[in-house]
Image 1: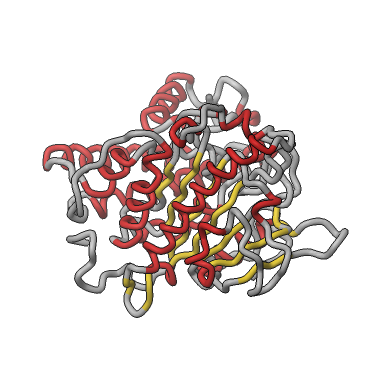
Image 2: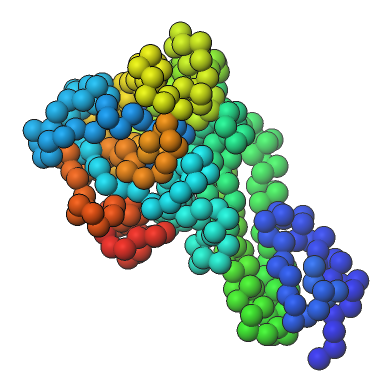
Length: 431
């Protein structure tokens, strides 16, 4: 078989880049280097989403004060600790877990494993990379809604922004950075001209994708087994893009729900937090998505709560009482807004049950002890979606090590209808 001409390969590189950099064909050594380079925010009628399973994950970068977070008494008679006090009205709707983590070290960098269990730099040769549980579920059921998932956070603070959500290909999912942007995404319908442009672009991209698939299929007959495995991963990426294009086609002429209020302004992460929660609740209610994440990151500034200190420097408290008091103020505010979110979901009717009954909500952090920046014994709260049992659970046996948090993620995925037996570093299922 004759070797492909360099001119044709240059054309292939151009075509691949015209779709997306993430679709660049992998280097194939066996071909030599030169060869490849609803109508209202308040639903008035039963829609397709009524009663459907939803999932929301909320996390922060610097954890919570363990001594003021975890109770001592297990079961339904657990104590109301300082940091659980803001959830007093939601007590019967939550389960607090102790003994769950990913068995990792890495401080700030391991925080980004909160929803995956896998460090980014160790994910290269794993079948699913460091995919996070939200994207893992979205890959299976996300085509049922306008948005497969919503990732909300900031692009400021430690490490340059929100890094809670990752795809199977190891790409960080960029966050929606404020209530104004989230509002527009959910409720602002583009002009007919802009929608027509998008339809045309989708058609062109689909045509290019067909061409890429055909050419990559021809290449697969020329490569060895090692390179064939690389092409299989590449074909998987193509199928993901095809799914996204199909969803884009489906919703191109479908109007978005009517906005329930005027577009909010972005202020700061502290003051914006209630509105972000409200918009996520509306996104679930209108069935715009069934999966959402919210990361409270480095842009959550203590100054907006009257504390003239850096959040990061406060987290290295060294057991200083005044510093810990400041941290409890910050953390209590976060838990207070989370509690109001649960109350909001519980007050929204979703068929024969509440929206909270339909939604599994995870709250926690990839940071355990904020002062020493360890990543073990993570603070975890589950609410709604069958998890609200009104109890405190210690998992694992004394001296045997903690239970993988990914075991809980397997259970969440299965309840969402994703029939998988493992995820990340799971060793089983935690129910």
